[in-house]
Image (tube, rainbow, N blue to C red):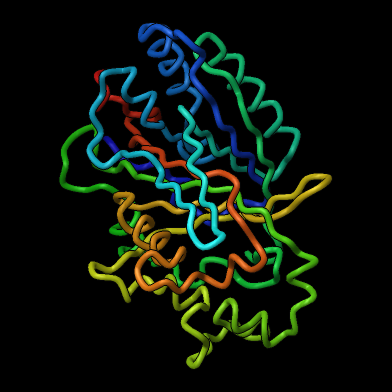
Length: 296
């Protein structure tokens, strides 16, 4: 029985690791197919969630309606990069050693066709906060609404239960943010840090107002599964948003950069994205990735 990758709807884990793979130059389609078949047996959808990029789908002569390049923007001092990858694996767990060993296994299994280009280790901060201290994903849909927002339905076998995901690595300037007064921080986010309540008279640039999902036409609901990340030099947020298409997040991003009204999101005063990519997350069948939509 076909279903979705269950990690998409599960709460964020204590620890996670994001793996971004590129296709090795000149990779034959047959080699990529063999590597993907090995991957299907290593993706349980719960501890490993997998997404395929547009370049990989094209190599396989596949056609996934709605999978498109991530939109890059350069406007008013804001740079939103588009950094496509062929393959994304989101490893979820509570033991960093196990995540390391899973990474090694995946890298070896995929080596004939793919190169591991970037590894980002993420973690849950408190009950689910960004490193700025604000709760992340407050407006996430729940229950049936989450299923409707995140999963493809009504497109047939090999497609129903799939999801599209936007993945971005954001780097925070925590010194700049800490230098802001508490009320300035709250107005930039549009919520009070103390009780997570929305500020009704927050400015139009407040992040909550820029991305209010019900304010779009059509409504732009996504299911966020973002987590903080940090290394020896930088820190920020791995932004992850699942949707039944990429349209909802594309609409949110367009408004954030001020493409509609010239008002840019106040987040850009203290954080910036350094990557951006869309992926198609296949459904599951019999405990493995279902790649029938790609002829596999």
